[in-house]
Image 1 (tube, rainbow, N blue to C red):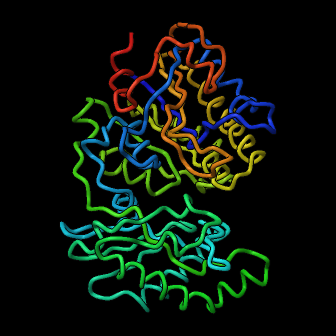
Image 2: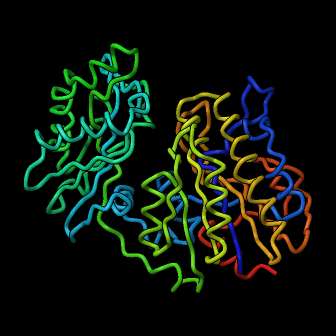
Image 3: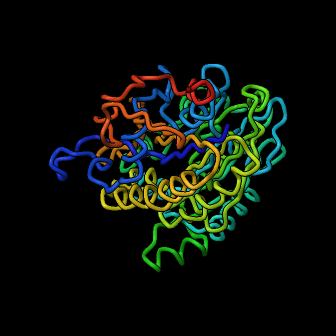
Length: 398
């Protein structure tokens, strides 16, 4: 078996008046995904089980064949694995965003996509000022960082993702419940530390959003995964610029392949991801390729940027993989899908089923779906499937 799974994070959307009632996925030029849909099998996939938050953690876990109802324990522990932060039994990992607060509003969940170097300096000062024998802060990529709390601290605190509350008053969304006063105090103290930091003064002077506060959320204990090879009998690899997705891969025992220039943003190395995936397929049975760019554009509410990100994904990732797969001597199965919708109008995730299309190079199995979009795939032969069953479906598909 040879299979490549191509994930365009957040590609799915909702109809927009500005596009005459079309979605950005319908508006974008997606000729390669359309080809896969027309000559393959299409349908919808439920990536977020009922009662779970519609995050990339839950959704990508499902796509990789791990049912969140069995394996999910929180977002941050997955990122910890990718960052090389080992968690002990009672350690609670928190996602620690660097965000921008302006006039008490959460104005930017990413601090203007702050650079790795700037962010590292800010997180290091936070760790030196707020870290102790029970708390530690670890720098990651851009605005995405980590806090680890000992002895189960904050495990049951109610925290809200900052990208869900952009332009809303921070006081209305501060942590609640058990240990919330401790977690809230860390956020408050971080604002005093970061406000006057030289990195932020320079960013403000340059007209950029400062990283003037941390925001803690997505916490959990380390999960217990069965390795992918043991579950499915396949040797797998994963390509992503996002610690969260790489962390799932690490827990699953997949080979994590690093691609130069992969940023997790609009400027990522699309072509490089495709080329590395094709190379990885030589000694792997299945390769997962994750591209974050459409999701970032969705969170920004930038319609044009999202259309461009989708078109880049289609041309440089899907197109490159499709051409290479069709030139191979052996049969290759390609599956393409987003992980969840990130509607432009909402600027956050939703949990509605997403479009999925599957194509085998050895045969054409057209159904009634004629384009890769939210509406057309509903005419396909797959119906609506539970995303955690997709890997098994690929294995069993005749």
